[in-house]
Amino acid sequence: MLIKNIMGAIIILLNMAGLGYLFFLGISEFFADRDADEQEGFNNVEKTGNNTGQPIVIDEEIIPDEDDLLKDMDLSDLDSIDLNDFD
Image (cartoon, rainbow, N blue to C red; front, side, top):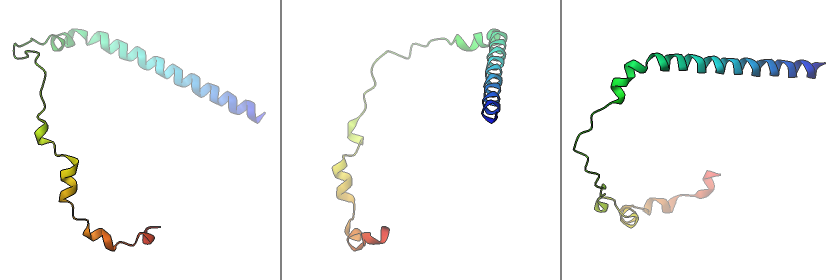
């Protein structure tokens, strides 16, 4: 009897969640249709002639190599660390 009650409660909760989702979809469609007139001005943005369609070139000189980063590090402090303390 306990299993029937638990399964019944789960089914009722899932049905309520499904109805809530359908309610959410209905409300969102209502507002999407209602705001379509106001949003029409935002969707029609005038195109400018600034974009020539040329690909963007990234200057690879500003990106440091990994070898350069390792040369700048001072690893002498790591020699005295006892790794058994970190267990």
